[in-house]
Length: 128
Length: 395
Image (tube, rainbow over all chains, first blue to last red; front, side):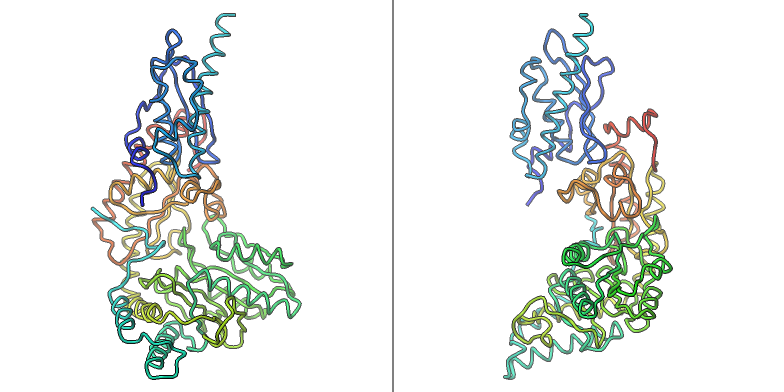
């Protein structure tokens, strides 16, 4: 019996959208090294559309796969669509996660949200 | 390449053990409690195995009872010593912070039942200081339990010294020797051991069988009530084939012990040297006073489960004390006990070598650990902060 689904292993072995965006419009980081998972999301947003997204993750296989899948799910989507991303959607897109790993998908949702909030904050400050 | 480097988790069975089991299943299917010839044949197999195992430890056959494994033996050793202590009005137990959970969880239960427990410091090198044990002994101490060799970081305790201190103070001494039996020479008399736990599958025997040594005069409390098997200390029809397999495996392990250990130490040190060339990595536990085949490392900026899954992809079976491997939130209590911070402890990797390990495999492991660590660090925000000076390196 495999620990993870093929989908999880695929995203873990070949994570999509890995890296940084130096001139990102929004950056979000969640988790901490103490509990063993940190995710950092970088967003490039043009006309309300997420034109590029990159991530960096310190964490287990499912944490890496969850962040990778989250970037795939929001790339090309509008900010409001991305805001509605749920951890459930991430987990389902990965063909499921073991129960004790569901927090990885929660972290992915939170990382996307944190990056979008950073984007909104920056926008408000610019328009002031 | 397929490399099994997780011999501390379990070992492949020795052909002699399989042969002994098969012979037993074919020829001694009787119940050792039966009076007829078929039963007595099984009884004879059981008692021969007991004699062989006792001889390997310098114990008497009647000082051994067979259990389902190391955990049961640990539970029974602690519960028995506690029961005796309570009778004598002694309710203090000394152990260490990095024992196996079979010991730690039993101690927690005993604490809830009114015992007080002192856990000795195991220091950064993973070793108990005999003087600290002596200082911790109180008039009401009934038991000292210190593992012979640690299952994660492989450090080997000065058992003879610890045993002598306990004996001088009239305190029972238990050692969880699950990782040591078959790997290191054991002499229960010379080492002043009163109680010792062992598990067959750690020395190339079958799973689900182990034994508890209890020095003559140390009363055991049964955990399982029922028939009078094992002189009333462990009810239930004996697993004769498994016992036969265990005895055969131990015989082989003891016969080849010195040669095997010498060979493993060379390979172990080569692996440690190789992994030490990876930046910001460190060996866990004393480099010399450790099991011949144990290598445990922490790599800063990466997480252990990811590390071991990628190694598995490359054919290397290893293990990690990372929280993610167990479903717990905290990383290994062993690594925390030797003072590793949470951040670093999540990036641990244990490689435990066996008699089949070759030099070529060691070199393959080093190269692949190096690759995989570099790959994971390449997109680790923790590593980025460290390299950009936003956080300080620990290792």
